[in-house]
Image (cartoon, rainbow, N blue to C red; front, side, top):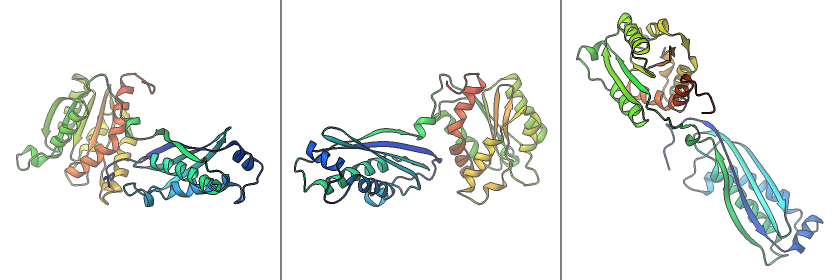
Length: 304
């Protein structure tokens, strides 16, 4: 079973269909309400809904999903019944298997209720029609490499007493994401040094992105949020809130972060925590919207 614990929740949708081929005379019996077992369509609809909800119990590697909606429609042709199933859920993984399972069971239920009337029954065309809401829908490809600085804020690291782990983790992640490392700097927990570095990156170097790590908690020397807030021209509270919410689902300590995020000039500045795990989780949380934010700062708009 695939580990999806690092993925973010999003609205997932999928639509699938299955086709039952049958004799025209059998379709006439359905339309006239003369099938001995009763009207097969409402029974197949209930079966499809139940199957979609129980997919993880049928398909071993499927994750249990909190399904929010299952819609079932039947289209009667001259020699076919098309069962179309749509599934929606807000979760970390897609619902295409739920839609396919629902459509398959709908067709199988029709088959079961009609088999004594028609020996020509055949199920074909079980297929996925569409799916939306996964990582690929949000992972935008940039046609440039955003120039990014990583600012490590730590008394102990700057004094050589500890090794920097979080800053190097950020460097690795942004390179994988296609960003260009413009600078990597370690400074102590000093508000003036923090402000000076952020202003240098935004006003003089005009970087696209600055990611800080460290100094976001409530220790006596933690001053990154205050220093960042002073130099921001636009606050983006949603970024920090998203990181905290994502982290709080995984550790009870995320609520202690006072991280800030915002814009100065055309530079996006984001505070990240100091611990390795918290940095990983924060990047998992914000990365889906980060590239879109950088597009907007360049004036490309929502449809770019």
